[in-house]
Length: 292
Image 1 (cartoon, rainbow, N blue to C red):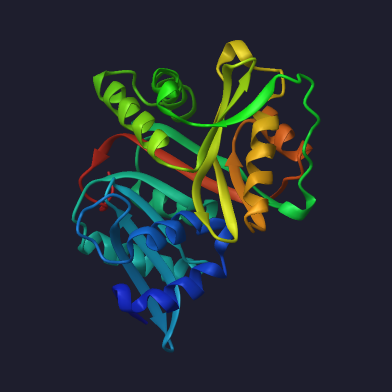
Image 2: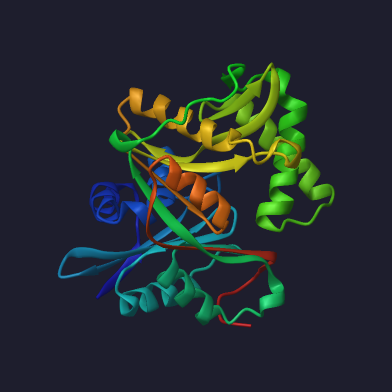
């Protein structure tokens, strides 16, 4: 077994390997598609290590600019060696562990982090949808419209992204979160992967894609403020965004959730559970991977 730091010359073999496990590798693939495999400390970049057996790539682990560790290594023996390599070459603190549930749980066990140190430690339902089987629910309200995000949505986006972080991700409501919500609002306005549902011109729900390739998209974040819940707004908007993606050639969608009501809503438009996904976020970064 040879383990080494990957670079852009390894792009083809890395893509081929990750594409075999795309449902639990889309963050990895989407990030490398945006900025490559080499790390200069910019957004979406990270240190990627690959494990090669018989000249074939059999596992990948990445430690990203924001402290997130992601991995794709179905063989946990290989994952153990990748983890050891990351430990020896860590250049930034660890803030999160995200990926296939079995692999994520393995990394967390090696880290031995006390439960109280997590802002969120969830094993979500991983769901997939063939967009040819997408069901678009009929709108009960004729005033509903999916609209592109623009500057006029800045204040509502700032409010909603802050509330989403607190409720869904366990993020502390402090000055750092306020600054983050402002940046996120600007990023959503500047991007082209998130939409708002309006009812009579009033914003009622948010949905977008947090990772995507030409053939597949991953849904998130999805947010409906409490005063607009239980009206089917999010389900309708998610379906509409997927219809939009299908029109440009996207064939598959995945998402993950640990909310039973949300899972039922996604099943209603065609999603089916295919596995489990680990989402672990720490309250404070840890500076090494040697265990706590």
